[in-house]
Amino acid sequence: MDTMEWYRRAQDGFDDVLASVPPGRWDSPSTCPGWTVRDVAGHVVWGQLQLRAWATGADFADRSGAPGAPHPAGLAGEDPVTSWRTARDASLATLTEDALTRPTTIPGMGEVPVVAVVRLLRTDLVAHTWDIGHALAMDVRLDPVLVTMAFEWARAHAVRRPGFFGPELTPPGEADEQARMLAFIGRAAWQPVAA
Image (cartoon, rainbow, N blue to C red; front, side, top):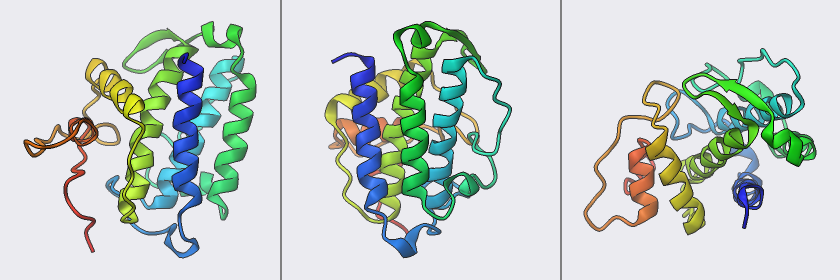
């Protein structure tokens, strides 16, 4: 599969977990410090809006869903699943072969083609799929190939600051690749959800 096929697979995994969130749980704390499940959904919606702008060359100054933003929940709205799907579909429609080669500038990465942003967001989707599922005590088993891709991307582009990757954790010796990848980006997959 190519980059876009794996990206769509990551989107599908996120969609599956998002669609499983019970109606009364959107404002539950997530595994992302200071964010609710709705905030995580809003952040992911923001990523799709930003990707669409970069793919089309449009200006995009909205920082309300950026990593570490105080409350991205507004971008998810009252119906986070519909907000996500609308943003996802609009973004995907712009990701033509030409758009994927369009240069854009990303803080910490410099000038890169849009396809590099797709790889970043693939990792973001994998992480946030787990974040939402784990916050709601779901047993989220991520696609093993996507886990490997996310782990490789994270090791090559580790951004350790608030709102991005947390401090690297040490997983238990018997941890599988999913738990090791999550530990690398600061998530303790082996710990139960706090009550």
